[in-house]
Image 1 (cartoon, each protein chain N blue to C red):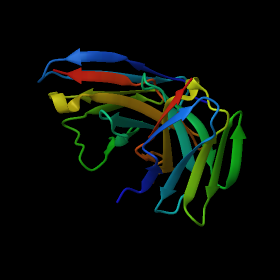
Image 2 (cartoon, rainbow over the protein chains, first blue to last red):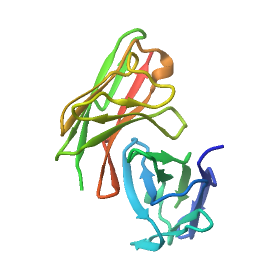
Image 3 (spheres, helix red, strand yellow):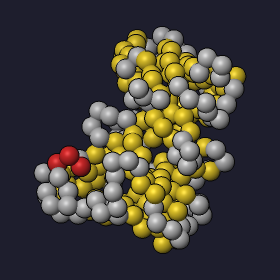
Image 4 (cartoon, each protein chain N blue to C red):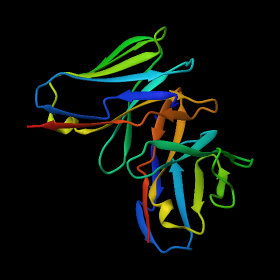
Length: 108
Length: 112
């Protein structure tokens, strides 16, 4: 069983829609990360969360430590938001353990 | 923050050859991480590279296949040896700083 599970795997939305991506994990963590990977392969860190909620522009990330669950929300989605969104938790050596990612496509 | 560069950005290689990927960080870091992302898959940790000691490899990865150097606190190399088509992947280096993770742009490798 994967330690990090994401849903959905693929998501297609119309421009302007509100988007939610979910992440569940099975082990205790100190922090959870949301990352964005564009088609060229580069990865950008969006959020690092240990509790509660964080907001950056149109992106909101929440985490419930007791339920071992996190969500990433995108408000007023735009075609430039099209990317793979990856949930990851901290490993024992400072590395990350990654979910399989959610491929988001936002249509104009 | 940390700015990471990788070379080469992409390469096409013949089966049986080796490729060395370089990773340069703009400031000193203790640990550097090497990940592999096979087509359609998520990232998998290959090894953790500490300066002054041998790299620590994850299950399924061995030093003979993926030798790593870490000559100083800002630089590391990963060699993919005796390549086969199954090694076609994106290889990324990463560092951790202040709890946040920073990634290089990746090296896209295609083995024919």
